[in-house]
Image 1 (spheres, one colour):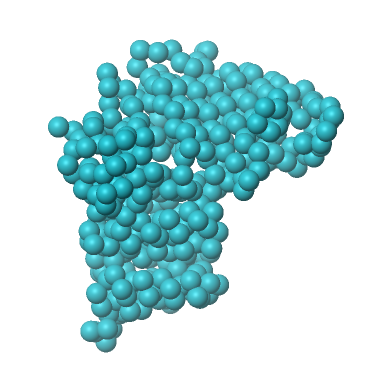
Image 2 (cartoon, one colour; image 1 turned 90 degrees about the vertical axis):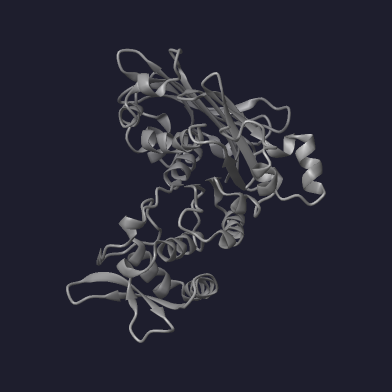
Length: 390
């Protein structure tokens, strides 16, 4: 399931931002403070709103008045258009207003029947009440009459996709809910990945990376071919490292041990370099046998040697081709040289608010790229107007 377009209104610096024709890999560049982190936080906000409610999701970010764009009263508006493997285009719209407390003033989930057909509204709610389709299995059949039931949520700050997504008779809503729950907004911290891990079980690397030994053990035991490929890539990119093994201690903890061919004894994770830990964590994440529907990663270049970044960009692309759409922010020209012009968006501030430009929409950049200039070089030359802080 791939997001094809995003429209954001009144979310912090994103007062009026529209992104269309999004590829499987989307790379965002721009000066500090231009809105890259805020864009990724839109995904986190939707996920938090689903897991909890919009009031708690806003409180986590300082409250409605801190999130709504300066000089506006709202509503905060987020629209996603997505498609699942050649299926119909699906639109999800969410508006959040402030009454005495934040409320969902509008929530809509709909398909469009063909290029010119009228939209099939599976979900249409205002202030905690609305209609939901109950005969969605008849979608696409000719002369089908839509059957809708009135539904009421427990509170106007709860998303309808949360309340109704728990019921299998609302399959489209349930699938969309599961997609958002499966998003991964990475906030990887090397310090969190170093400590020993209590015994347990984990298939996916957590956003902070604090379950790294458990995921390594899962891959080692359940997906040995993928684990061996990870070791091969580690040996190619980290001098000396030719073996990584999750080891259980006597008191039931798990530690990662890295074997350097030059030494008899392996190094425990807490003693290896930041770059080694980060490369291993990224390889585990990007070789996940079940990719997240959306993966957001900020500045993957930190702690990594510049010559490795184009290869890492290819790893992200392979991940996306296996089913996980990727959103990346970067300050690295070396990483940018590993992606296509069509995958690059640059962000800049104007009058205090963020604007987003797709690199391939610029005719001069297209011509230079066609002549062999690399995107990172074009950026360093200042040709992505407004993306440089000076």
